[in-house]
Structure formats: C-alpha cells, structure tokens
Image (cartoon, rainbow, N blue to C red; front, side):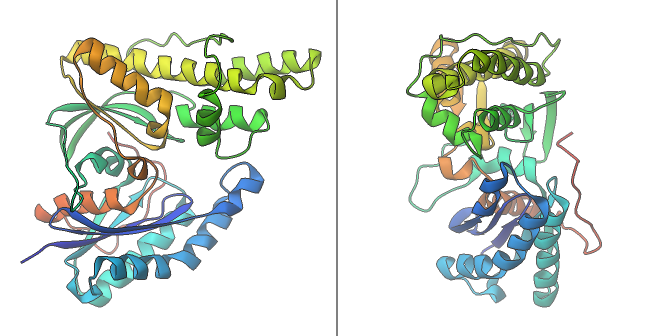
Length: 340
C-alpha cells in the first residue's frame, strides 16, 4: 500500500502545500505574500492573515495537481516551528483539524530540519543524487546560519552557528539601507553579477571555533555607506553593482572559511548547502570551486527547494511516518527552537 503524505508549511510569509507518494513528489504549491515589500520586511500580523486566506485554496490545489483525494492521505506533515507564531498557528491548526477529520496521523517537522532534508526530495522524472550519511550541511537563511553534521535524517548536530545576525538577515538590512528594496537577497545577487567584488573592502569577524557573526560586517557596511553618502548623496546609485558584489563576496568568504575548517577537521567531504541564501549565485559558485579544489562531493538544491516550501516538510514527514514518529494533537507551535 502506498504512503501518501500531505506537507504544510506556514512558518513565515509563504503558504505552501505539497504531496509526496512513496518519497516521490507529486505536487508543490506556494502562495507568496507581496504585501510585505512596502514595509521592507515581514509584518507578522499581515502574514498570519494572508495564511488564513491562502491555506485552503493552496491545499486544495496541491491535492488536485497530485491527483489525490484527501481520503487517500496516509498522514499530514506540518511545520511546528521555528517561525512566526501567528503564521505557524494557521498551518498547525489547519493540519490538526484536517488530520482529525480524516482520522489519520500527524507528523510534526522542524522547519530547519526540512531545509536540510530538501536534498532527499525525489521527482518523478528527475535524477535524484542524495548525500550519503554522514554529511556536512551549511544551512543559511534570513534567520539562521548554521553548520550541521547530519548523521541520519533524525540525527543532526549543530557544529557552528551565528551568535548574532544571520547571513540573509545582514543582506536584507544592507539592501534596505541602500534603498534597493525587500527581500534583499535576490536584488543583491542580481546586482552582484554586474559588479566588481574587489572594489570595496569590509571587515570580517574573528570568532573562534565554527561560529559565525555578521553583525560587525553589517555595522561596518552601514557606517562606510553613511560616510560615502556624505560626500556624494548619489553614491549608491553610482556604485550599487560594485557595492553588491563586494558585500556578497565578503559574506560568501565568511561562510566558506568556517565551512572549509569544519570539512578539514571532520574529514567529511560530502557537503551540502540549504536554506534561502543557497539560491545565491556567489555561494553556489564558491561551492563548485571548493569541490574542484578540495575534492568535495557537493549538493546544491534546485532553486525551488531553497526558499520555504512544503515539499521539504512532506519528505521529512515521509521518513518520520515510516518510523511511526507521530505527533499528538496537543502539541503547540513553537517559535524559537532550532536544530540541536
């Protein structure tokens, strides 16, 4: 008998649903929220309201595209956390209600664990090359920057993480100060391809061990930009491509320096990247360069699996379902817990 999992993701500002059958993705639907662009960041109250409007049609469309009736579902996997509490509550509550009405199990998923396991999503007609355990995963997003040793789908150890701002957060804040808009990641990435990354130099942190820090870089960038704009109010317009390229290079260098140290110290050369920032071309190119230079076997997700999506929740739920790792209906959403 087939195992069919409906995945639901609502941790931030994307409402997503996906259907996986025996580990193979049948459908993935994402409804994004453009309302936040005017505010330069996600507004939690607006996000939760949009989830309430989107959750039913998104789930309906995912089931329709998969050709699956809700009565055929084996279980419902949902993001329990971390994320914005108001957003999470919409997905968690919907999953509980639907699972109870169908009398099927619920599977809770850690959002960050889902990002890591996005590498195990199988597509019907696509080649699926998966990392072998153990592997090292660089998880980089707007809210998290972590280096994780992955021993199994349910055994992950954080070796290093940011002690302040995350890489994506630093990019978004710098983009906002430059007046480039939100979200800053895609904007900076696009401009960086046209600029010279050696034009500007920004300070890099000196944090012991494998931990990251991006607060100092962000502050250095902001103060430098303020001084330049005093002399030339149109400085950003005249130099935005070079600023973007230099900022991107600095962040990628910081990320790769610690990752390179972890790979060397552990001897594990199966290396993956995950999270929203893994869509950045500079970081992807750095991974390819390191693979050639150091003999790493690298795994870079498809662009569609880098940002928040329910396919990664569904595949995580699939593995947990096989282990009968179910969730009771009294489990609440959580906003702050990370992979331990």
